[in-house]
Length: 258
Image (cartoon, rainbow, N blue to C red):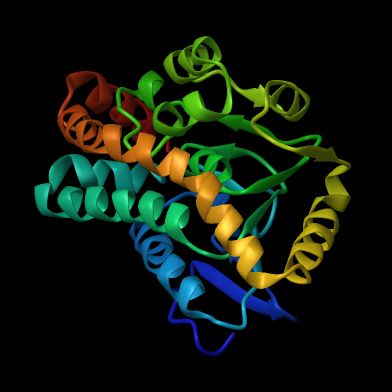
């Protein structure tokens, strides 16, 4: 779509007043690399500035919503402090800019949403999830702290006990369970998730604009205040975790298999 300056790892399409944003690394299951991470940080101010946009549908191309961090990118981050600083700045921007974006965001979770993908789901305003999909935040399991992940948003969406369980174990959360505990709004047949999310977005796009945007802002102020209270500690902790021997050992095992 013209008017958006996004990398190839992100596609933006206009459907009337709705903007369809697709994560676009399908061969890598939309895993996050530098291009996608930076693109997401730069996307939300452009959505905010698009005065014809009334709602966004966020989804993934291919079989996944996003399968988490690209391991080669994570390996680069462990070795390059400057790149790591850039990534942490962009991670904070993704969270704060998505929360501050005036346009309601409807997620269409078409497949696994892991790591940052799981965070994008938690930061969306309404979530439709394919029944065969799942959520997971496995940062701790590989030796990382999730500065922009479940620990900073889940306590506002689900009970603290459940937030702790899924953040500490990295266990998968199937679609039905995610809806049961309040992480998603609706579970759909796998082939219907985008259609249902688009229908919701178009319904929102027809509502009175100022009331819609101010109501979203009012609701997100609760989450924004909680995020701002925790994210700087989380970023410092994530930075430290990139140099942990546990992460190095896990990366070496994964990369050796590749």
